[in-house]
Length: 165
Image (cartoon, rainbow, N blue to C red; front, side):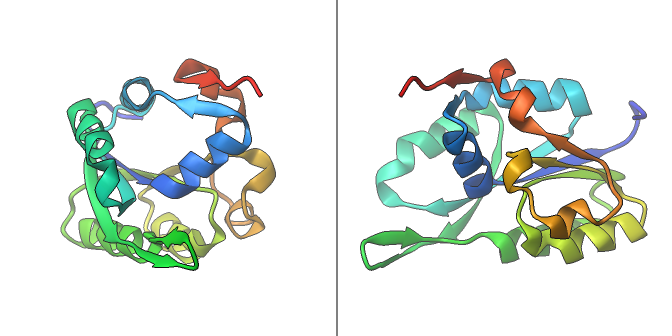
């Protein structure tokens, strides 16, 4: 990677959180941001996340760590909170591409719904790589896009604590 390149990282917050939890890791978001900046020389790191009013302190912490938060309004459905941010992430990345807000970008998600975005970015030579939270849960719709994927399974120890069950 060139040091002069503008590199933006776009994180599917729910996919990252769930991937880490399923592997019994609790992410230290400050250390994660440091790892991402060091490894990928990121200019800006966006974190897409559902907005839940009782999590305001957590959101403040994330902002203090240096993330730019993009919120999705959530709704409660049968006791579960729903707030899928996929469309917001796709729209932001695409908008940033057309306004030349980055030279290269990294997508953090294993969600196959981003397959078309990955293909678009790859075809325009701006996708640096995909970072998937869990090798075993990464969609084939991303794996078959002929692009580099870093799986976090062997990286979590650098920025997370193992949860003892």
